[in-house]
Amino acid sequence: MNLRLVSAILGYLTLACGAAMLPPLLLAGFLNESAAASFLLSMLLCLGVAFELERYGAVTDQDNLSVREGIAITGLGWLLVSLLGMFPYFTGGYLNLLDSIVESVSGFSGTGATVIEDVEILPKSILLWRSLSNWVGGLGIIVIFMAILPSAGRGAVYMFRAESTGPTHERQMPHIRDNAKALFRVYVVFTAVCAIAYWLCGLSPFPAVNHAMTTIATGGYSIYNGAVMDYGNLWLEGCMSFFMVLSSGSFAMYVMTWRHGWGGILRNTEFRAYLWIIAVAAVMISIDLIVEMKMDVVSALRYSVFQVASLSSTTGFVSYDFDTWPPLAKGLLMMTMFLGGCAGSTAGGLKVSRIVLLFRMVLSIVWQKVHPQAMKPVKMNGQPVPDDVLYGVARFFFAYVMLDVLFALVMLLDGIDLIDAVSVSISTMGSVGPGFGIEGATSTYALLPDFSRACACIFMFLARLEIFTVIAMLTPEFWSREKGW
Image 1: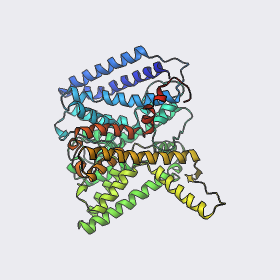
Image 2: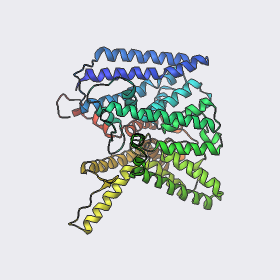
Image 3: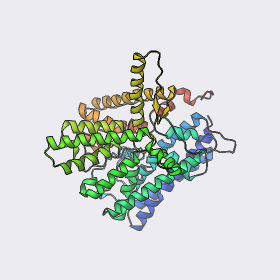
Image 4: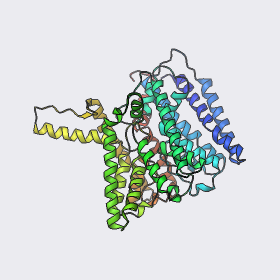
């Protein structure tokens, strides 16, 4: 492994992290907030770390990233940025060390689960930093890095793949940097349009921009304790629902639509399946709310559509305390949390494409049992899916469920009730944020014991990089000098 190349690119990432702190620093200076000193100190720390990394590292025209180097840069880059991102909270005295790490990891991973019980007392610059961490982590630190900074050399595709979500990694352009730039343009346009829409719905500019960033990133950080419940604005809830569902679709699909027309969306099997899932779930929850809680039809549809859009997209905004809903409604919400959005989106969860492929794999096996001589390939978007992709889906499903179980067991050992442990585990692994019980719609991670919060950081990290990138880095063979990767 070329450690000098890895070190140099990590140095660039560290400088980018420091540069991302500039907008909050300027805001703190403009508003004369004490947080300005925290951001200045954090930026100097980033500069010092970058200097040390660059002093050791080196990038030449002949450098070509291998698979191992791509994985190392992605995994270590996410870890480094998350650790550096916690310093504004810690140096400003807003959170202790553990809670600062949890808040930063939750922000960059797009989980959006906070340990801050009263966010409204925080300076605006800190609130902006929370939203920025969501936004940067939503599309991906590596994707944004490749889009706005010089190319890291040949083989950068391995970094792109290590960070991408889903069973396949589609590219719409031959050069990986052009692909990253196209994704970033769509991301920025969606964020800008979302902010304008929120402003038209009645939000002032600062809340509109902050909530637009966390909506498109499906992170869910809010600048208010009650999030959407504080507004009670039907138009805003409808607008948020639209953009949360939009952000749950593959951004590669949107790039294809931008370049080749609407056929890319109409032919996308996964996105159509996702829309069906949220539509059926919203209707069933509405009926349950009408029957069990005696809600009127308009209110039932309003709250069910919003919460299904919020939890299926893993954004985690709350317009109603869904922890008080009937068991069927809560069960359907938990199912949408587990499934998540589409591959290549900013949403977390298992991803709908994997569910579609698993379902079609089962149908194919049943068909072959009935017709032993017949061949029935599994298809996606009208194209046969290679066997290695199907095996990868099955492996990921097993690892995802086992980690869900493992995290639940960890919390049971830490004294948390079974239902609460399962809910928090699904919410954390799905990068959702809110769940049920101890971490319900109106609760925070502050209620979790210290050990469970520390473990939550690990599982949020695993979930954001889709498990195998992190696990590969934990093996001794990964760091050996032998070739073969």
